[in-house]
Length: 109
Length: 316
Image (cartoon, rainbow over the protein chains, first blue to last red):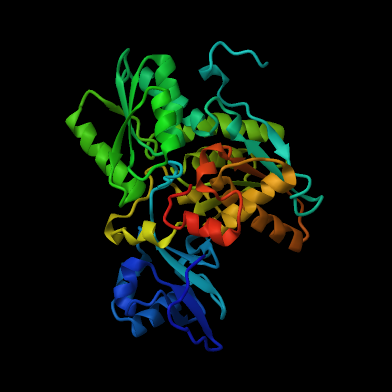
């Protein structure tokens, strides 16, 4: 993806990596990739919020994924994998992204 | 029947071609719907024609009317062609960091271009277009993201055409932008085969594109109904470029970059079918050809270079 982590993320046996979008990096001290653990997406988010206070509230609203937040497990949208109950395993890669408009063709500078 | 009363009448009825070399196995076959074979070279000709036809039926468009649309790409080019032959004016709102080819193509067909700030991309073009529409109440904004005629063009055209050519279809894979293709063709195909898997391939852009977004001001097209889709993949520029080159080098099909993202998702589900020992007929959309993207330089050189070139671009 061309995203190069500025600092080494030490992965423990049970951990997975979570890619944080720019707009949420104030919560992670500026880190692009952080480590988290859990066996479901809900657990991962809970654990993320314990490490980075306030992050969970930016992802969830009334116990649901926020409308304009997309989360992908290994490039697949979690909304089609069981949502917050989607299973995750060590070594998985989670990507959090804001929803954007598309469908208009390339804009090229 | 290859004779048509006018250029607009020739929209659609595009070929579906097999990919004998890229298909994962003889039992898991890929089929490409060549939408670049439309009059202006993209699938958006179907959408533009359907939206203009509907606006005419609704009495919104009359001779000399002005159409306004936020678009940086194919929809604008398609609307410009339809507007030209139907006698309308077209004003396109597009991000200021759009390629010279795009402005040239739009102006060739007589469209006026208004630029929106580069920061914010398509979201910003939509916002600016809404402001302009408010100031010009006699202009008609067709608004592809929320226009039911967009999805209906695919429900009545793209979907039935694919099913007529491939009744054994098991998977349909298309890009997720306005969501019109997936909503329209997806609904039609599921009605014919309730077991079909509808797969969305969403372009994943570079940091700059997302970095500008306020999470409370995100954008989900009004047409989007996630109930139509079974799986949704996020595909980055590196994978998209790698696949679009494979399509050219292995099957001889010269497609635009967004088609590479769609092929990447199609191959992912195809390989799963092989691993699970299932047979599959996977149809995917070739949105347009590669001509408009030559200036990106991504058809040659290393994948690292291509990835860098697309890093801050809205490439699909």
